[in-house]
Length: 242
Image (cartoon, rainbow, N blue to C red; front, side, top):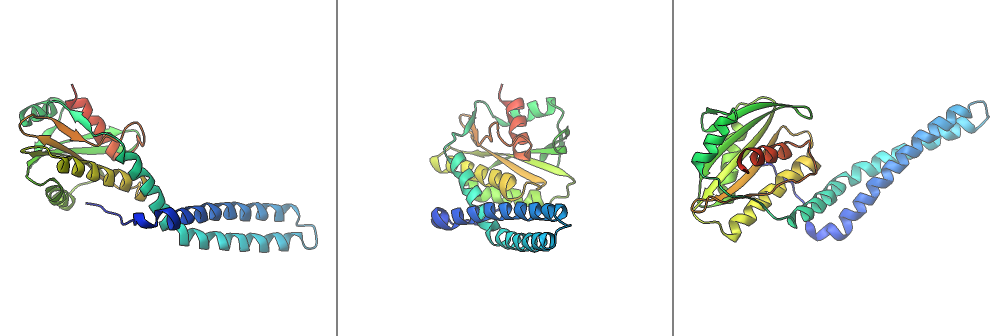
């Protein structure tokens, strides 16, 4: 499971300062480019071009330094901002997610069985192509089990973009299992949309009550439509939410 380390205690000061410094570095970089352009137009003057070039070099040097020093804080700030946004969002509910129906609907949608997965490769205008993997597992503890199954998936030989839709069946859904579903969803959304937009793996975790067959997962919503996580959410709702 991909993880990132951020410290919420420093959010109010260091991360916001880092974000401001990153913005300043961009402004200084743009200023450096403008000075270079000005230097071209004043090249016939005695001191115009040298001063413009010196100013551009100074401005860009400070810009790169500030960008290097503040990048991690800026990323942490954006990560925390997105975490809070999805913390407020309710989990998406699926009404009937019994294993037999899930498997039947996936097979009817063109998926095929390979090892313990139901698999299908689909062309995407935004991601070239994505291979979707659906897997259904039984467990008593959501978080630890999910990490184990994701590790298995990561070690599996694959090519190109992949999205694992992991259906985790528990005896009874508790507040803890719902919290796990939300935390796992937030972690993957933040990682893919903020930390590493070029990742080729994504994981959508659906927690299901064996007795009621009700399932819950964190839907990414209408934002970040190009993300692998968003594509996984669409397939889950397209096939099962009917």
